[in-house]
Length: 299
Image 1: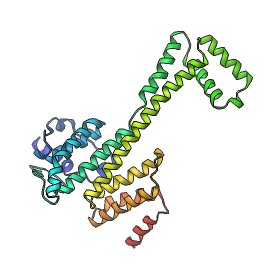
Image 2 (image 1 turned 30 degrees about the horizontal axis):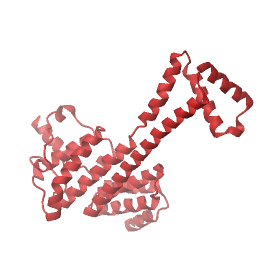
Image 3 (image 1 turned 90 degrees about the vertical axis):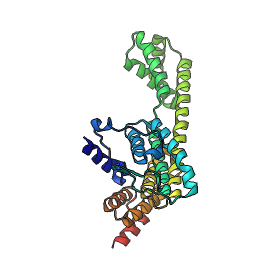
Image 4 (image 1 turned 180 degrees about the horizontal axis):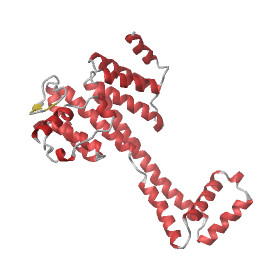
């Protein structure tokens, strides 16, 4: 068992390589029971990193965020004093960091924190708005109406509200018929929708705030350590993902981040990581000027 734990430390506690962030990680439950997360980051940084990443993998984003923030508070004085110094207990037993320098460790912590915020935003559910509609449907179902009847009512209301010019007399008649049968008024539906929309807007604002925090953490990671290829890679992922979130960032920012990640990975001899980033860049924009630059360097 001890040998197995040591092997797990060697594979996972050496700070994860690029593919580890892009592919789903797997953990052995029996071995996990043997791992106790240290109370303080500097007590065993490698294991502490593992515990944060485990929270990320298990969708325990709040727990991971709390751990990462606590670790950053510990590392901040060391970063100000001597960024090139080695972090205490960087290698303990078989567990070791990929780069023991304070600035590298701080950069990786900001990177992980950004990943946690990003995933928290992506996985944020509009539960309050959903509950508003569920309660409305449940109330009418108790009166004997089925889902399809209630859904028809809502569809007719939506069409009448958004496309009044195309709302036919037949539809108006059916709409009033359903309102009468269900004991509901148009004002009730308007109030229902407004209440749900209010909750949806609150969720959207919260989601945007998490995305902003994620961006700040990724930017901080590359500022602290401009050689952190993983940070540039995740920054590229953020920008490319942000395009679908209607954020002001453009494809250009994502391409540039991927380009910098590719250069650093190639410089470090990580061919697998380099190929993965180039593939991402090709998928994002096959005509990217940065892709041409990389292919020119490969020629």
